[in-house]
Length: 363
Image: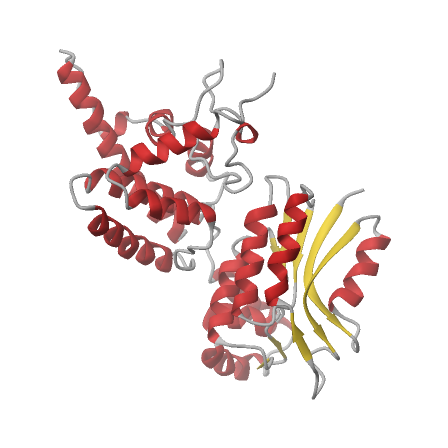
């Protein structure tokens, strides 16, 4: 039986959240696995309610589920009491999401032109991070405008929306949709930032290859345009063993798998991004920026290099509408630790390599 992890509140009054989700999911022949975010006397649409926040207990659920090797087929997040819970939801997705896992996020923040009492600008920013992890998001119009503009402009926009009906409302919804470029499109900010970093990485690798060529008495001239996705994979993922077919060994063979799921900059991934089959994700930008800074500032002291990386990547992520570096994320924390060493790329590669010594594939 398929399973869906449901991160939502349990409300005593009001047919919503877990009270509604569990029977609906169950009648579809799917097992609902609830992780309560809060217990409420009544849902937040009531004029008064009591809320028991479950933030400090969410980690305990996650730890126990990991011990059980829990792999949900789907993840659904709903009501989150505050920004800290949104962080927990992001952490949950990054710990339990696999390639085939479907993620749905309902960014519960308000309705009918008014934000709920739990709303803060910090929560809204965390929701923006959370929806980027999802395949499907289900905001109402109020929440969609909050995600785009925040509280102050939402109220201004709502004055216009309240006057719309029929075709005018549909036109406005199309406008909202048009505000966000398809992340797979070359017009998206993330794709443009990716291409800038990719070109910097190609220049670095071309210079590496040219130096090797000259030291070996060769005459080939290496240019950035000669550097392929395979070359990028070979240099950046040099610590990951390859199989007989020349492909990176399966992630499952690494003891880093449960922490760094899908965090590999393979030639297949690069080509799929360049061919607009995959969207550019924050992992792609962070990995490329890490490689570029580790090489361009190889002779700088580690702390200067670390600070430069943080300043630059924060600006890139902000331009793409992505959240800041998230130190609770195991992969991002790992990248930062590597930058504080004398040889970041070497440490990055060695840890990947050692991760396969205990977890080699069994054929």
